[in-house]
Amino acid sequence: MKKYNFSAGPSILPQVTIEETAKAILDFNGSGLSIMEISHRSKDFEAVLDEAVALFKELLNIPEGYSVLFLGGGASLQFAMVPFNLMEKKAAYLNTGVWASKALKEAKLFGEVVEVASSKAANFSYVPKDYTIPADADYFHITTNNTIYGTEIRKDIDSPVPLVADMSSDIFSRPMDVSKYVLIYGGAQKNLAPSGVAFVIVKDEILGKVSRTIPTMLDYTTHIKEGSMFNTPPVVPIYAALQTLRWLKSLGGLEAMEKMNLEKAAILYDEIDRNKLFKGTAAVEDRSIMNVCFVMNDGHEALEEEFQKFASGKGMVGIKGHRSVGGFRASIYNAMPKEGVQALVDAMKEFEKNH
Ligand SMILES: *Cc1c(COP(=O)(O)O)cnc(C)c1O
Image (cartoon, rainbow, N blue to C red):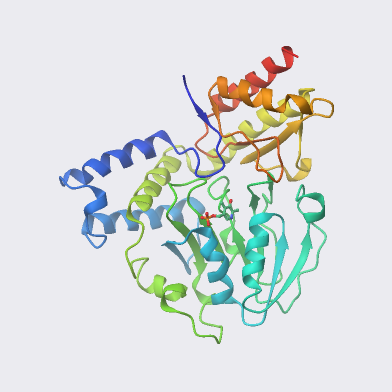
């Protein structure tokens, strides 16, 4: 049976990414060696890294003066590296979910943290919009896509202080204005590559301003100077990321990707709103186009497990919602084809007919 992978992360990747990476694991560039056993300092791998950086810059239209890094430690290490490198005294955080809370908690280890707003009391079902960013904050941190709750900040906001964003689960989902941010980071395993690598896009001039001593490995300037090769980078995930980046470009870049993402999200949200057995959990104006969260509608709660089984029987994988929201979450990242979303919608319609 055809499987549709709606997992939140690690998650669906383009078929070509998986196939090309599988080939390189057996024989990288016709070298007779696996990409897993070559030197990261070999010419062939350097070319992989260079092309991946170049495609990041091209696809996201990254202005001059920014560096693109590939680092270990996932997005979670960035929760610490960001304040370590950027916070002298004070930073502002918008609390929109579990990941944002974790970033905020880590920042408190380094100085004063102002939580400008939080939607925690509403189980993070919306993105707060009414808040004041302290003018003396060293930076303002947002999480653009709240993977667990299915809310998203899909517009590049204006911030009076340097803006930092965790874009783990919506990078490359839309064209964006990188110049509005000083730093963007994320784990690769949602929309780019297998787990094992994090990306960081950083404006060079923001660095070198804090007075604390930064351990070499945690200092962005180390990795900028060494081109992500200070130590051995995650070679295989970077190779896979390059395949996804090439795929993105071949499809027409991020304008084309956003168009497809909007269309897929609309198909699914329209069905959630129409189908009397289901309802969405995120505030309509904040709905994510990457993670679609829904539950059984009032009076139909008892059908949850049955729908779960019904959908699995039709090849749907990973639609169980996060334990903190319950119900269902369909992650429809870039690599999820429209046909997969349509299959889920068809299952929802059929389930409604049966009840
Ligand atoms: C998954 C996720 C993380 C955690 O990423 P790791 O690479 O596992 O540390 C952080 N932020 C967001 C928004 C996520 O979706």
